[in-house]
Image (cartoon, rainbow, N blue to C red; front, top):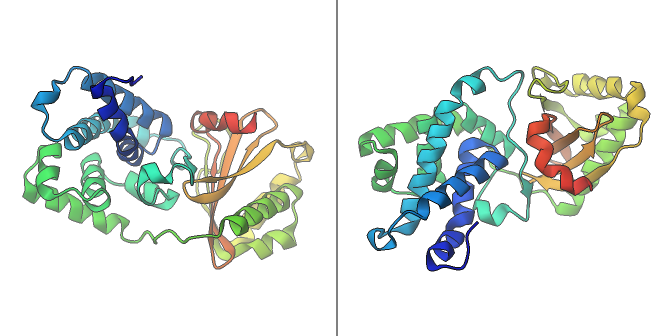
Length: 291
């Protein structure tokens, strides 16, 4: 871990930004933390007198480590069972270290890009790097980098900007949704959900989850009322209301002991999207919140 030496202090100052780059690239809190730690170990072998731009240097290191990670994990990502959702990130306390939007919708859009497109888009459009800096980081010509950014934009331009939700109102809706879903209150669910609501669920093949998204208020309501009729739904649940990826969310412990994170996208006072992360590998870091 970084200490008090000048080189360590330089790294600590940049660590939040490095994490921001890695998390957006990988969609995983744990993997992003591992990448930043790897970058720190490499930083220890660098002669500071030979580094003119510490920020640029370290971001290049983190980006290239992320690209290597994505290329190595490509087959695993392509074979991922069911729908992939990003690993939940606790916010809003962490939003300052992430600079801008870390919405689930944006991260899911980035997941559909190639590693190079993702890196080019994030560094240029999100972190405002010049094409000259981008060229140095990706080791591609500026012309090639412009093409990468242009292609990436076409994939993510459909993602709506994050809608700001009042904290108290968001948490109130999260509590109301959780209670209605667990009790199977059809009328209450109908009142909370938008007509074109979407339900996305990620079990990672390790815990039961819907393999495909569910669309529409009637189908989503039937899904939750069906779950409420199961005997396990009558058990007492440990839960906490928080904010994940800038969205009001409920973290709860399931009857089998696993942790589930459910985030809600809200527009015009109704829930338009529900993101349920059930994969235990992606919710393990949330365990302390339930202790």
